[in-house]
Image (cartoon, rainbow, N blue to C red; front, side, top):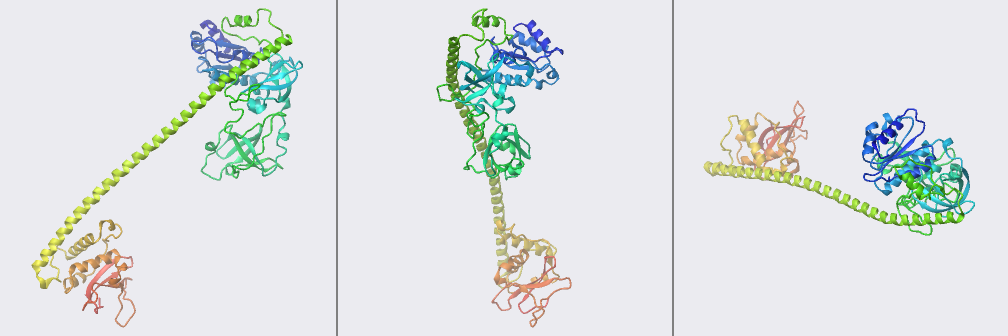
Length: 605
């Protein structure tokens, strides 16, 4: 399809509501007339029931896109299958798009489209030219092909494809067969495919020998937030509650597993139904080898970093694995017709040897030469894929390292920002503390100078009286101010939050008079004791001799008040004649009420 008119005709065919068969359309890369998707392999698998059209990217693909519903076109190497029910017209997701931009992705797209055909192609529409066949697997072409050599003449090549034989199992070719394995099945002479589905072992045979306590391999098939659904054998599902998967309730199953992951599980029970758990499996426990799908085949699951079926080509006569996806090998008969770009049909006919193409039953020598040539080509292709695989692995490693460095750089920058912010905060706090310290130092020096000046003016005989200049008219306000200044001077800045000065203390009616009448003791000393009482530090100073005030010198009963307050006394002076004592009430709510300052023997309050 290389012209706009033919592209319009193709769109009209696809949109015809009376169309009865599926149609495959593959496009070429820009600037090329050859598709990366193997249209011949698709036509061969379609068995004449599903036509295959090749659309040249350019004017034809633009015209095709204009004539098709939104998001249903193909171009640039992509391909898709259009079902006859036209569900894709209103829901374009129902017609899956397979992209191809190089040889490897082209083969993956080919395999995907063949898988779609396997699900769509009606059984009655498949070829009936089949016969029994047995042979030996000579080559694996991962992930979806194997070449088998055998047949009655011992020289026929057949192809095994999981999509063709066992599409419901969801396995790759390396999970199904291995090189050197003897296989039996039904050979389709039209397509060259060997159907081995009849030989697949039953789940009873595969799992019948399990015993409780064994550790087995399972494939994750689905998951919900609360459970993991696994397959110990294809199409045998076991549900494992999240609590039996991980003991950590904060784990998310989709962070621990992914669909298709291979994991370990312990057999809990096998009698009524198979029960599995995963929360108590150790890494060093022996694991039971998984069953094969076919007699003599490989384990269908392997616990390795890269399983054998994940990118390994096993070529005949060689042991070096290479990655990539193989191209389906042609059998010994010409493929069914496919609709190709202009001129392709003639070129294909010429390559077949003219109008008289070789029939299916050609001579044995020609068959043998063709088979050997195919093997040689596959070996060359495997070598090229090995080189490509190494380059791809190296690229993946470089990308992983770059991503690791990017994340490390991002984390470092974040830590730097946090550290810079923290340093700025600490610097600001330090500057504020230094400013407060300088201010307090200046006030302290000023207060000391004022006291020295006051004492000097009062003379030596009046050093016990309080002659500081009053700053308030109300004596109680003046006292509270002096107590606050004493607390500010006596308490270091770092301790002020630990020993705060309460503001709800009470000053008794006789306290100020007893303070003014005080002789023989420095006023500042009394203020120090008051601060120690109000902040609560007095209980940690033994020399203050804190104790309850008794009713009399001959009584041990503590003095109390009708409101529940208890009287206490502390020493302002010790070992001094007529040593002074500070009396105060401890109110029921914990507050302090100052009573008076009296000599030691005076206990009346």
